[in-house]
Image (cartoon, rainbow, N blue to C red):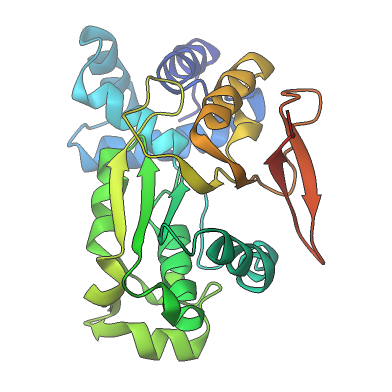
Length: 274
């Protein structure tokens, strides 16, 4: 069936209210496809029945499930690669020199979906920075979806997921096969602390961060919401810390506290000197 304009407007109003994500008209097919899949999974005989139940029970678990399936972002191991090269070659060595005395490093991956980004960082640290052993090292992965975070905590990925961006040598070294899937080993899984955080709501108490990655997320928000999120990041980021956004995202004309920092094939953002 085809999703009516009335039903689509109901769904995108709900999603925007709960997550601030804007669903444009061209997303109607995506919405319909995911709603149909959820209807089958939840035991409804049609998408119409699913929508009727949603309207009958505001603020229900069902409504939250719909928001979550429509705000889950595409992700992969070592996505876009160049930011990870910048971390390995320049940013992490620099921060380690600056933090030699305190021996602490905090990294936050916001909107991490099923966990590939924070696990990629954990593998990068384990592979290239053995001197961090014994440091107060904390990697936080967060998302608004409790269900997707449960997947991330489990650290179990399909063959198709590990084929996307994960070098074969790291697959062999840090994963073990489990049936048709691959299970990430505890030495990497234990490095990441997953938390449920909705970027547009109040954030829990987090320690000041050395590196924040909120990649390919701001593009889904309006300007006012982008400003609010960037302001909260400004307060959380250490004065010499780094912010990574997606390749199509920028702080320019959104928040003037940040300036662009260029690397060989990548760029990120730092706080302007006051």
